[in-house]
Length: 165
Image 1: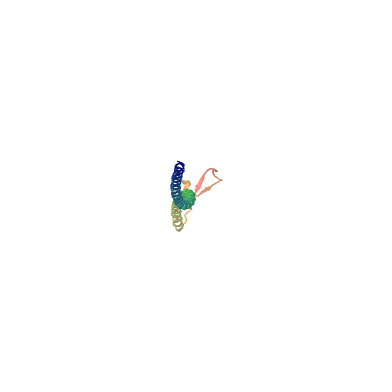
Image 2: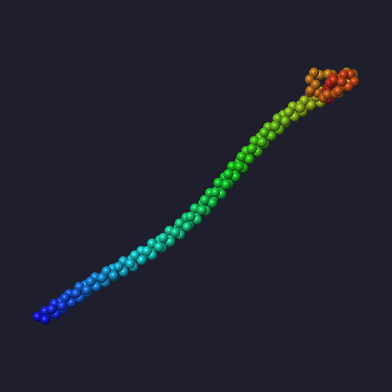
């Protein structure tokens, strides 16, 4: 019967349309889900980019701080080296001053001894001057290095005569 093929075609058409509608609905649901997923991903991406910007800013700040600290560290090393050199120079100066002080102390001791000797000679001279003058020739001393030398050219040109002055 001719109505059977038309009916079968109509049934096929209805079935195909129903399947197409179901497929379209499924695809529409999938597109909606994908759009929602895409929106969620875009929000996450934006949050990640903001966090990344924060990390980059923090990294720049950390790098800048590190560079400042390195610069300060290098300056402090240079200052330390300069201070060490100043200390070495100061130690050398202190040692030179210590040696000079000891030399001056030794010289002062020698001058005190010499002053005592001269004071003693002056006392003896004053005591001798207070006694009545006797006519006595100047004495020749064995230790002539401690007494002033007078050279007598008339008798013996090599003879040394010392006085109590």
